[in-house]
Every structure is written in structure tokens, then in C-alpha cells.
Image (cartoon, rainbow, N blue to C red; front, top):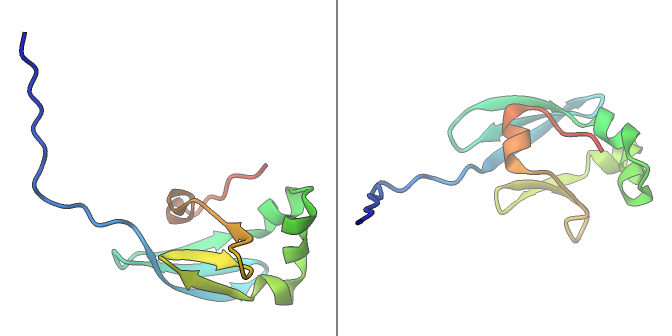
Length: 96
């Protein structure tokens, strides 16, 4: 028996966030490299978490202090808070 697999020579671009803008109430508008925009609500996740290093981002000024790094939206000097890009793209953060 012989099994063959054909691979596409077409490279698929990795999904990345190119910009992020805080709207209000822990909602961030994300723009991806495929030009799509998503509004993502992070408040539910933050409020349901019991972990102090996550709950500290309930302070709105601290939450607003995010940046784009390597195509991800991150919080903290050492990427203290980061989310899977596929969840961000669907606009649904999975709560703990």
C-alpha cells in the first residue's frame, strides 16, 4: 500500500493583530492582518477569574495599558496577560 500526501505550495499567512483600540467597559477593537475588525469584551473573563495576577487588570487604567507585540495583544512587561489569537478572532474569550 502506498499513501501519498500533497501539500499546497501556497503559504498561509499567520493571523496577527495589527492594531488595537480601547473602546469602553473592557472592550477592545482589534484589527487583524486580513483587515477584519472584531470587538472583544474582556470584562467577563477578568471578573470570573480568581487569580490575583489576572484580577489586577480590573483596574481600568491598568487594563488600558496594553500593546501589540509579535501580532498579539499583551499586557504587562513580561506578557502577563495574553489570549489565544483564534479566540480573539472569533470575539469570544473563554472564561475560566
